[in-house]
Image 1: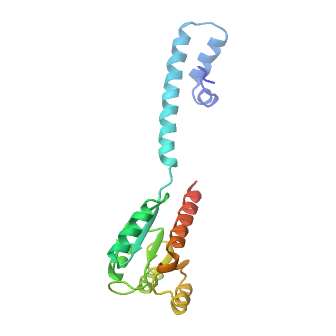
Image 2: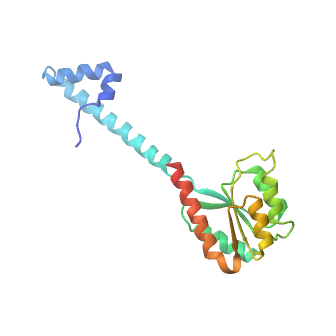
Image 3: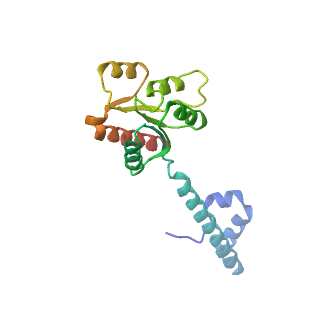
Length: 191
């Protein structure tokens, strides 16, 4: 229900509004109606601007992902698949250890999806880099997606704090589901 009366908060912060409201209650000045209408329009405009800016602010930022994969074809498939998910965006890609480390040192990523075997170096070296004392950002969620899903690599990944470890040939859909799960958790935590 819309009212031409000023809000209680407006009356408390502006004594002139309280005086105008009192005069209206006792019907002393018809001119007060015009003042009240103008104030109501102003209050509604301020309220609408505030609500529209709040709706822009309330929209959660998507989770930022660095995708580290040496296969161009798979990197493109993953890029497109992940960017079609809600609450996550691939904001950086790398095919080598060197480029991945450079990007990680320049930008805060919330999630890191990486392969073990890279065009130069390997995914474990990338993980070891972000675990150093002088790493400038919060450590991202770590997901490995690899063709090298041997027990030795799984064990090494676990010891390095990898959150998820998936076999490309068998667990591709599970990896996408895990990304979506983490993105939704991230989004919910922002509310």
